[in-house]
Amino acid sequence: MENIENSFIKKNKEKLNIFGEFVSYLYVISVFLNSKLNMKIGYILLGLGILKLIFFKEDIKKIDKKVYGAFSILFLIGIITNLLVGRDSGINYFIRENSKFIYSSFLLLFLKDRTEKINLSIYLGLILLCIGVIFKNDWFLGNYTRQRGVLILGIIYIVINFLENFLKKEYKKLYSLPVIIFSCYTMVILNSRMAVLVIIGCVNLYCLFILFFRKEYKVSKVFIMLFLGVFLTFVSLPNSYKEHLKTSFYTKNNGSNEARIIMWKAGVNIFKNNPILGIGTAPKTAKKELVKYVENNMKDHWLANDFIKNQPYSRLHSMYIDFFVQNGIFGILYLLLLFGIIPIEFYKKRYETIATSAFFSILGFYIYGITWSIWSDYGIIQTAFQIILAIMLI
Image (cartoon, rainbow, N blue to C red; front, side):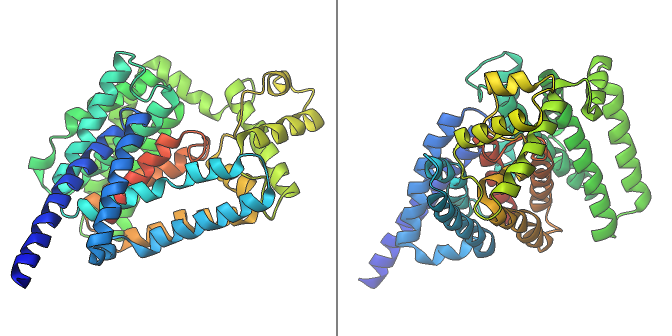
């Protein structure tokens, strides 16, 4: 009787695992396609993950306790601080923006030892997104800012994966090169200045990582690889794009850059006035405080009318400034998680190809977040980060 019961449990677990694995791949692919589709698949993944933990409690060990424990603590503290601040609807925004880790954590239950299939899911998602961008199909994430943010993470992942396989002489796994070329071409179409800087920056950091933490590779080989990568990137970029790239460093006579600087200054001022709990997560509160700052300090600036009259910005154009403005001093907990716990967890896996590819994609998220509110304003980009993080931990 006991053997029959064990056999029944085993069969049901196998079925749950197969279905969960299939849904997990769909969840990874959908992050490159459509945010609503991704959310719906996320609900299914969440349900399957809860079922697995209810009936097979031993699988809880697969979920990284340090990383997801830290996310859980942040989640609880954020709910409490938003309640204490008492801003309208802030608690709803906080829960929606900070609960994404829950869905992705269940990938760890279903995708163990599925490296090649995970890679294929990312490649397929990238190809579909690029096709959508080229044919200007709004169904593919809709907003171009969302498109390029997700695309950046995907490109860095496959580029580092390619370099890893190249250095390890696993030449049969270099089939991702056409996807890299196609994705980079699409990024040029999206005309993002920050994208190229982020990708080149992450490749440079990867080369430094190879030199200092993996000393089995020849220095000359790494530098040749780095030189060829930068040279080919520079040669292949259109002249108009190169000129556009130079404007990244203009702090005057560039509306986009000057607007960011105004928002960052406003963020510092808002934090000084609300250092303990912040102002909460509601976008309208941040907009109100931003307008107040411009009226009091920068009314003569040529962009002031846009800030005061049109009020186009509900966030402060930097993930890190948003952390401190919304959460006060508790914003430092995000930094401890992102720059402390996650790198430490990666260091344990630093010789694994998939973990290394994922970690440098995560670094791309960190760098991109300097000039974009990608945690709060563009939720699908944070979802992509959470998926890549789960892949690193797998």
